Image (tube, rainbow, N blue to C red; front, side, top):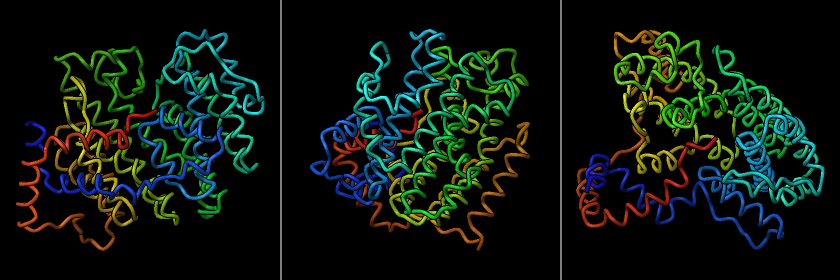
Length: 418
């Protein structure tokens, strides 16, 4: 019944969960016609759904040939990432694989059968993926191969290198996520669904990736510590503790929260670029694809800000909250309103004693001024008292059913994917 109590505090989310289940999801992820696919392309989409919790559905909602290009782009990078993550591959073998991975796209028989990672099927059946890569128009092939090459070089660089400075943190995030944003932007423009400027402005595209990657790194502190990974920059955490792992010690909880708040503030500086980027998009399917992860990220940062739970367990946004964001973020003004409201939520939690409080408030003011140039806040939802009463009755009668629905929705909206 704890789930029901949480929902009763946010009745509009129950409405959106029901609306999502009853067909509202079709506005952001309409069903793709599988019968029109070749056998090899159908296999690629099977791998996409097996390896991606958050992007599979929205990729399949993209328009025209862009859908296939992004699907193959995702699978190629997933294969590259699987090589990087596999700790059973020696550095002597891994470094040249990362350096040369882009060349395997043009080798019909190349595959790797010795991975122990959970997504190893994309390496074991790489010939199917590379076949569909070569079936893409050359303009798409060139983008995917170029980004794969640059990412492989960057991954190899950071295999044994820790992030000491904020510049190195940005550089790492560029290699693993900024390049994805740049590559996607070039694909959008190549498809002619978006203007050339979208693909040419690499700074904005890079910020789209950095904002998502930094959000994941901040949120996943404890999970990464448990498996021996460290992604927080030493330039920040060394102000508070001697070792990054010390942030998890109960006696350091106040310093740990201040350290996290500083990193969240760093991430928020990408939001103006995010809003500018999204304001340029014209195609609805591309807008949905880009906007949904960004609003999930700002909601996640709002939940993490000044929250000790990051160092004790898991912090996640509510399932109904995620579905509401996904269904609301379909135009730039709606996204601006969402950003404004979560910035306000963070602002209300900024401690006056926090070392980063001035910078945090400064970037919040900047984003809010961009979000609402008219100075008028328009709420995303307006519901009558009768509506609230009906929703509470519905919740009381069907909370177990909604729990099942929300689990399905969570598979789509989970933002923890690298």
